[in-house]
Length: 133
Image (cartoon, rainbow, N blue to C red; front, side, top):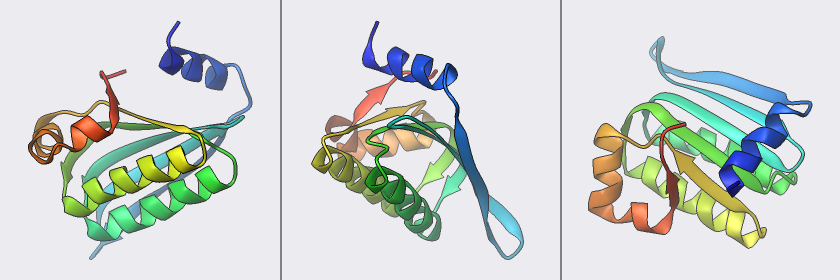
């Protein structure tokens, strides 16, 4: 059983806390997020478009979770349709913060434009990417 499968099994069999929200601009929702935590693990589900203002909010939310002891982070991007350079920077920063805390960051569901952007900028080589779950 790989680390990612164990991560899900532990969360599925434990008490889970979930924080969620949506980020709006001019009344239009650009991105929704949910962060489920259990033990030392956090599963982050993102949906929509990630622009600079969204990336800043989400980065701080996840860093706060890492600093609170959730050192194993899974970020699900299957429903993310757009990400700008700030989103890429967010992913690299989260990777560095989790490693500094002796944790891990796994990214799943990367597809479409987001996948192309990560490949073009070689961010995909710095992060641990897994298939769609």
